[in-house]
Length: 69
Image 1 (spheres, one colour):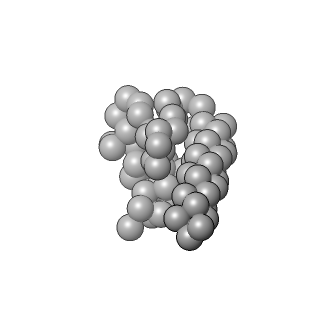
Image 2: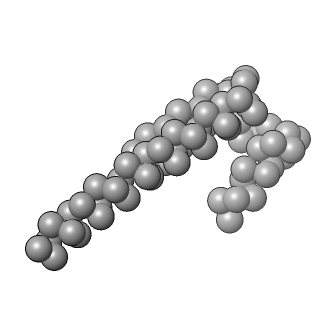
Image 3: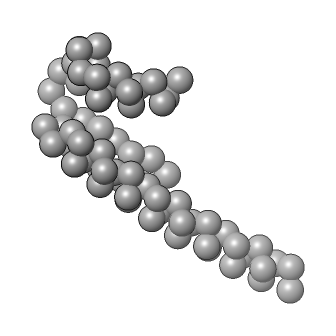
């Protein structure tokens, strides 16, 4: 019984994580239309030309980088 409850809880958590990651990636993509934003299991990737160099001049990227600290 306990194993079934744990398995069900893990499945719920995985669905919630996927939904949250997808929502966050969609919001980032809307805020950063010139960059490629994609959701992968458990993470969000942001790609684009001169991304590292732009981090210091683009306030949107500074904010995202600040979240990673």
